[in-house]
Length: 129
Image (cartoon, rainbow, N blue to C red; front, side, top):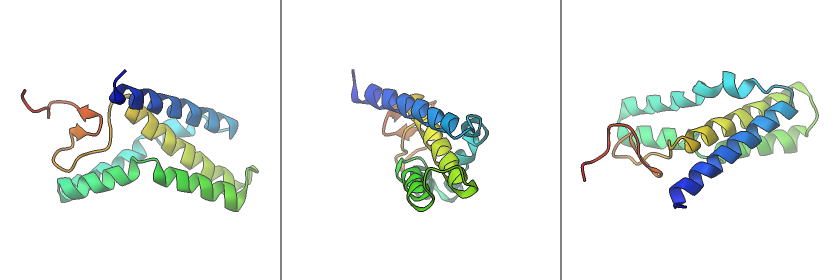
């Protein structure tokens, strides 16, 4: 199995675990409702490919949802209070989005083209050869 396939499989597992987390929080539908919100980061490409890749990668890495999850758990705990629940639902929805993207082959972007990702080329932007 190639490293790219391992990363795609890992993304699928993370998406499933995130969905289970949302289910445990009583909001299994939130990852679906919020799914496209995280793709608004692609608007950074209006400022050029370098800025676009930076903004997109910032939102599509696991670091920020991990910090949000950590904040939700350490500051608010696992109880079902409104702040804790919302922070955790946003975090697991974010993990779900990134996991599904990775499972589908949409990886972190290189700054030369939106179609050039760490998992390979997507769409019609593939170079010849």
